[in-house]
Image (cartoon, rainbow, N blue to C red):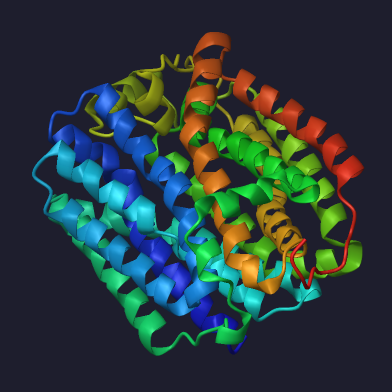
Length: 438
């Protein structure tokens, strides 16, 4: 862990800064009288900007090394948070998200650094470390945001605290992180400045399948994340605090998988088989989730829940931000109990185990099909596929939710995941690491 530890620390601190802001973006937009379309644009601006910027930043890290690109990325993130803290218009909020999105390749560059210093059979576990840091950041970031907002009642304070966390990650990179890509292993400058050379990786047969799997699973899983709050409201009557505990449970399972399980399982079964297992678990979990009984929690009262919803200043989800308000019927009184919550927790276990396995395994498999000097390129393209999925998932999931009911996004997602199991079983085979361009 000597060289992995600093990478874990900088990713955790960096994600902490991001997740302090995420729950509050709609409040920022509402504070300036944003329309639903403007809120949707703000929600989509970051992943769309990453779709353009991350492949180029990843390729540049292959040319100039990981450390300078990490610093550029983290400085731009810090600037974005400062702009958000001092924002006085919708346009400034949007610009802050675009700057962070275009230059913010922190996670992809950190993953490339881990790939530089690990061998093939240890790489998946190392990439899981970044996933664990990401998961921990998603647990503690929103808690810090809500606590800070509760104590100060000023939107600028969480944004400025996020800038502070980002500044700490800059210091960690500048003084603790050691360059992982020596000059003799770096790629040619012409390729680094040509984003199309990075996107051309998609058209290599095996890499194309891996990218397709990455994109499809992220559309499905991010759709689940964005709609879970609406789903639990309609089935269990859970509001903000209840959902916060639910996401804490999800975060704990994800971190456990990526810290304790993924290394042992990939050594035992191989990354390709673990991908198949992960897709199967996610598919089964989503289908089980769709059949969660409509039984509100023991303390639920419909009238109180309706009042709380009207009083809450932030109830817009990512899906609602993109397609507009989604009507969610509240469960009736009189059927209160714990069975619905128990069922949901049981469904979330296989879903979260699969989610904790899938991305590190897919990214590790991608690095096996390119030479070391292209790790940044391939992981940058992978991150851009994730960003593209994050941009469209709320739209697809929200439309299914609104048109066909609360179960349909999860049923459709689970069915597609199980279909992807067949694709993965046919196409994925273990292969040795590539040592020269293919």
